Amino acid sequence: MVAGSCSRVSTSATPRSRSALLRTVWLVAVHGLVGVSWLQRVWQSRTVREVPGVVGVGYEGLDVEGFVSRLTDLGVQVLADVRLTPISRKRGFSKRALAEAVSGAGVEYLHLRELGNPKDNRPGFAGDDVALSRARGRYADLLDVGAADSALDRLAVLAGERRVAVMCFEADEERCHRHVVLEAVRARLDPVSV
Image (cartoon, rainbow, N blue to C red; front, side, top):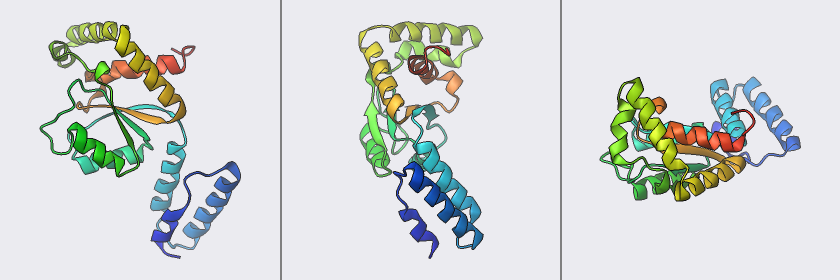
């Protein structure tokens, strides 16, 4: 058995086949056929992919290959692009190119323009604490209306069934409107704990 052959393990494990897979992984590790860190990464990515939910990701500072790798590490099955206008000066991050790149990794691309942050509200996310609070509040008010509210419902349904990443540019989620989107989706997923 070689390291490459382990990648053919099915990702749709039932509880019974999951324990068989764990035993196989343990035996392969014990016999030193592949590195333990590689096995841990494979096992963790399988486990994460099986857990539905919602996470936030920004592509600032990443190339498209690094971004796609991050999505697979997080077990993402659906990428929800919440940019108002899904174009980028960064190669590979415009709508069509990004959709193709993530599709190659088995991730579905979904553009939700309704959840984009209006251009005139963006400076507040980079401002001081008062400006940030004001920008978040204004954006949250926009989410309570029509198409945005429906898009949040759609995201919540997806996140209840699959692993969804909400994406925008900023690396710092606290300084991005996706932070507000994530809070709203999580509130719909678990209204008791929020």
